[in-house]
Image (cartoon, rainbow, N blue to C red; front, side, top):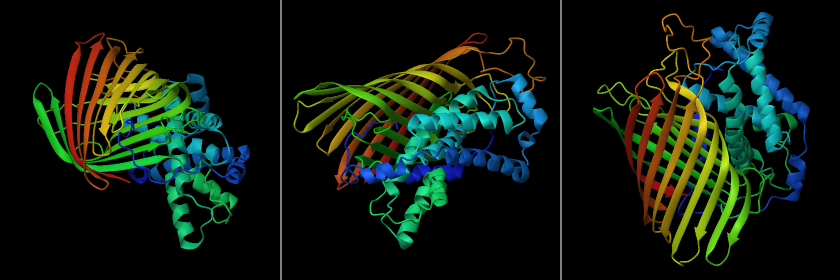
Length: 492
């Protein structure tokens, strides 16, 4: 799919408030268990309506692309469908934003068509896969995309469950009048398929004796930071840029509660939105959702749990200025699962020490390429593994320091012929992940928070992005980028 409703999607991120556990948490509301009446009422499965909404959305989106946008790819026929089935899946050449962000967002819509109609997390993931397959095989005249059929449903599950649970925080079936309308409208914007389902069923205006919250009121912490962002890239000529940035962090659920094993009862969400020259508006998005956990240690001194987690990572940048024509970094992993450990020390009364370690398999990822520039694509598709390590220490709610290291080892297995003629190649039919290569990527983050007054904090954040790419047919490339943020943080 070549559509990106970018600015609308950004509204959703701003309305939410990543990877990063919030060191000094502040509860937005007192936790409360879900009412059994709400669970029973909204858990009724309606496969027909879920499937109908998914098919209807795909057809409607195709009609928009065909008759409004008049996109070349939307002129389909039985001939194009037969050709798609005959050729099968290939790696496509869409840009990073489309393949690693817009497509997972599309998958989130399919996913939430299921969730809004009583389907479980895993059942809704199956619906997202079916919706993606329908689009790839029937709704475009381009060959079906291997990376899309992976990123759309799996990335859509991560984004979709976050949006579904966020919309659940807003809805209240006890309200009426303008208050009810405002809540329903906000929930519709965050989770359109849930909003559409509520309109179709009449739940959008039906008053009930209970709130309708399927997950009750969970332990949620939200913080928003605003300030300046400086970016420095060594090319080897140093290229610098300065601009405005907004960080949004959410921690949902209790990271130390190991007995809840429903997917995404605990997750973290982190986004960075830029106002900096040529840099992408969305430069960072991290989601980590817990699928299953078990308690290993819980005594007077320590807590330690082990769990299975889903990860969604997206880092994007562009040329900083005309000093250098090079792009600092591009890193993505929309389809990643792994095992994680979470630890807390209980040895001190005024000090809090937490740490975590995650080790993950990357089914689909992407990393910046120095040579593969075809159509809109300047990155290599890949698979591999990653690790995420971190520790934080805080004194009461006054001061905290945290350090994290996110590492990625990515392998681009399917390259292109060494003697390829780029002047004659067809970007729509070339079936290559990119340059035959392997890359080691590191994102190191140091953060410090100092309380100013009430819920306001002074925040300093430093990032280091490093890439070491070993090419089969080219010289190896190492690049390094430094980033600093000075921000004012408010904890809701």
